[in-house]
Image (cartoon, rainbow, N blue to C red; front, top):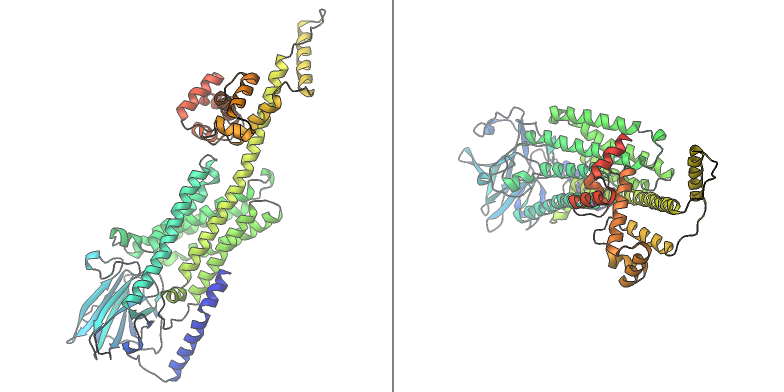
Length: 579
């Protein structure tokens, strides 16, 4: 749906661009025309008409560039560029027929640039008049925004010749445009807003997952959190935030290994949390996780390979980033048909991500031709890769959060049911042990007496004993506390409200049934719940047990646990391990 919307949004301008290009070829123009600023009313932008010279080694200086042979191709929008330290030179003319001086800017549809220097031909020499890029210190740069651009002014009725040197980019080609500085500023602001939304979303969802799922076993959220952190780092570095925020002058070639590492982290974390979500409810003997192991192995190899020489070998990671969601989409679809509940939002999240990746790949392979426009939104839609990937990633993360929530709620219900059953069984054993045992026959031996007592105890557990007075109320109170055990603020008032009685009535009935105050009763249930969590091996640390049982202080929890059960939580862990 996202790809269709993007395609429908840019289809009219694409058709118009093809028409303009056909008109340009049909006109028989054999040289690059001048960029007539009269065609650019305030706020408008169009492709830059320029000839080009490719400098693969990056050794041609400004003093000698004018003597080089520039290639002139009519209506050309994209120009190939050599990898660093190579450079691309563009030569163009601009004419101002207006009655007043005009200020215009040169920018690129590709946002990643290390160095863009604008020269003006003056008296047979080239004079640098503007400079921008990620390796340019702030004191020497004419622009402090994410979008790279350089500006120039031209007097009324004048026609001037300019040269632009471009170096350092991830893309194999660049698409220069010329427009008003106001439109370029709005365009940069729009791009910055999209990138900032992505970064803010990653931060918020990371904190949200850590806060919401911190009492769950780490394996159920650690990969999801790693995925969000990887997305944050990849976006932060790729979009050039270190240069804007901290004045960093590190080049794209130096940043690329870290970006590839972040991309690999995103890919591997995505595989792992999909594996956990889709196999947690499956029989361990039938989980068939080979596909996840293969994808993870390929991801690790591809990431390490790309980090060695990212500009030459970064393709495997890019391919795997695109292939993985489609493979996982198929796996989640099979799990959804098998009735795994959390597979539904997992499928929806991977579907959204796959659509976004497909749209990004399509528009990267078949870029939309640049047309004249006065809208910053139109400019963004002419290169919808960033917008499509950002929106699909946000939708994917939201659905994945839903999937994790569904899984955790199901596990919480199962855990509460198991602990409730353990509490009830313990109560039955206590009741059975308190029942007076029948007198053993005098002629029975000691061994026979022991067997008789064991048989009586077993039979007492099997019998449906009538509950003592107030047992039903105690069961409901116990269940209410267990269902809210992780909520630290769940006290006497909340328990009374849940049971539909007043606090005074609650205190009186608990005092009569068990001789405990409501606070002591809740604390006792929390401690029993904590001990059952240890026995059921639900957590690996005391801090997690305390958190899941509703205790804010680990030391206070350990003290109460020892008072209640005559052993510390750590001793309970050790005794369980020895058992």
